[in-house]
Length: 345
Ligand code: DOR
Ligand code: ZN
Image 1 (cartoon, rainbow, N blue to C red):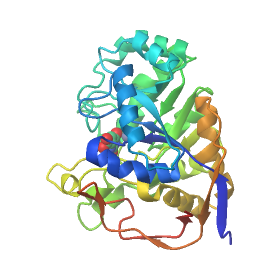
Image 2: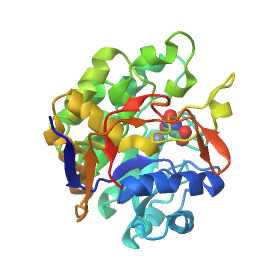
Image 3: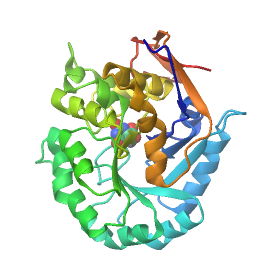
């Protein structure tokens, strides 16, 4: 039995670090595991310009514990009013790594998102020319589309066309949750990739209804049927360079999730690598973990791989029921469970 696993230090290609006290509370968890992270811009108000991203980056850097090397990679939130020239400037100045497409009202703080994707052609062209990556929350929001079908319908209605019209645009279909998402990424060219979260490797939609309503298993896109979870496990462990790690760690106060209208989001940053590696071990695929966690993402983004390494050891760890994050009680993913791996200090 493998007792320890050493790999190049991973990056997190999708994380919510929030702002203020919550940000100062969660940044150390991400910085402890990852060298870099693609930081989501869905603050309130959202980070929509290069200048706002530059200032937010400084706030994040100030929250990184002394002696820890962690680089936030910034994204701009696309709106109906986005200026493609500003994005191109942000990329050229080394401020922006990607821009994020949230269809309006798809998820937390997305009310300012894009209402008509067809009108973004000029912005996509500017991104294609400047090499700025497009990160996509791939769900339609039309109320006549079943919530479990929203990813597949988004691919059919929008993503297929975006990828055809802008073949040089690098596109990440984020937090894929369906076999349709996997098939889309596999069938697209090398400018298209997908990220996969730990929760979508571990839970299917039954987890939200196990003996009652389980708000801590609710995130968006919502977990789907078991057949989809199995397709995601196959993709993540396949060794393909087109699927890589993106936690979508999304902290919310315990009370905001345990409410009549609970927030979407799972806070997995405290044990993200441990959670992923457990899924890889269950698939007999520890040998492809480094590709997924540390190699495929940098290759897609055109960035160097990290020089240092991390070691995971086979040690049982107890995940707390709640964590105090800057004075707010937050329930982590795997709360109250035991995980069988631990990241060495
Ligand atoms: O579950 C989610 N939570 N999905 C998202 O897309 C946003 C995130 C959040 O910001 O809480
Ligand atoms: Zn997210």
